[in-house]
Amino acid sequence: MSEQTMTLLQAYLSNPRTRRTLNKRPGQAGFSLIELVVVIAVLAVLIVIALPNFQGVTDDAAASAGKKYLVDAFTECNIARTRGQALPSVTAPTINGGTFTQTLPIVCPTSSGTVQTFTPSLTTIPDFRIDLYTGAKTCNIARSATGYNCNSGRW
Image (cartoon, rainbow, N blue to C red; front, top):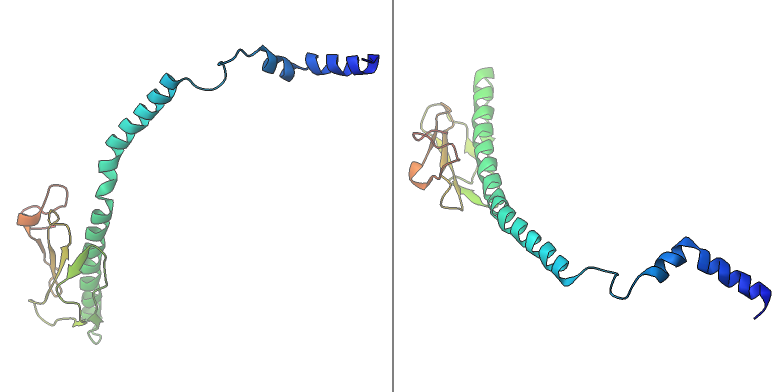
């Protein structure tokens, strides 16, 4: 070997990155099987804890959207009545996760008794009803689970 080749080899071998690579023993790189099993076990526990919290999110969203429409429909009718304007029609939207009793346009009422109801698909969430003239809100306690604000038949 020439002297120049020997100098390049020495420079390569004295490089810190090359030294780290050469100093590793076989089997020293990577993770052990026990470390991988522990990581998988921790992830499994986290999934088991977190999954139930996310399963009811769409049902809650549907219930909230239905209640929001009911309040908006009453508000729209009430504003038109207060301003002495022609009473508008309110049309129930399509909500994935529940249905309204009246899907055709409802002309805002001039007296109490016109009720719109939202029935969620999930049977543990109560039906929500609103009188479009008085704004009286009621719900079906028999279907209700805790946490859906159906206390004494009101929401």
